Image 1 (cartoon, rainbow, N blue to C red):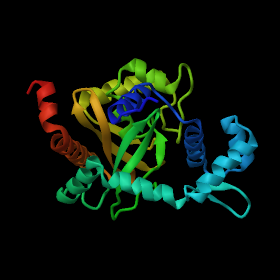
Image 2 (cartoon, rainbow, N blue to C red):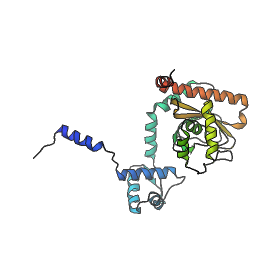
Image 3 (spheres, rainbow, N blue to C red):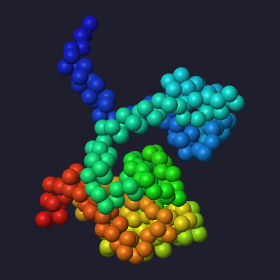
Length: 278
């Protein structure tokens, strides 16, 4: 009888894991969580079964497991919504993210935007996801929360992030010929207009959301750069439009860009300088 040594076992595992492998049940569980997270209300088992294209019995088994592990909650009506364990995991992720930690540290250090609402977001497909929020004392027209998503074409952070992408990639993310999502009458709702706007954003280094996410609100965004044309995140400051004149808007723009540049330098300074040739 042949005996497998420790070295042989390691080689066997290495050979196995060198090929991409997935576990279907885990993939289904992730898809369930994504469907529930994207919905604006609790979902029924039938809805999840149809959305995933799987038998109702399979959907029930997945949902039941997620309920047992507190990743989902089952309401009295038998509907499913996200469970508290998701929040725990997201907080754990954000706690160990240098980007978020540095963002909070710099917001505390800088003075000009003190009291204003400042957000940090990353690109997710054609959307932005907010990963940190520093809420100010002044009221704004929208309630920002960590994990919230918004169409990138409408927001100042989204346009800052999209401006660093090749135009072909922007088109791919938004779908050929598909109308863009709009949140207000001021939102950019066609791709060609968006691309024209992104060229301007890329040239000047900052973006503006002028009542494009919420009526009566204005936001100024700037990119967090890891290297030239490599934008990993973006920040934005939000204000009620009626409280901002042209002089104050210039100050906001300057300070927002300064905050973004400081964050880029602290996180990626050596690599950023090396790749830019400075």
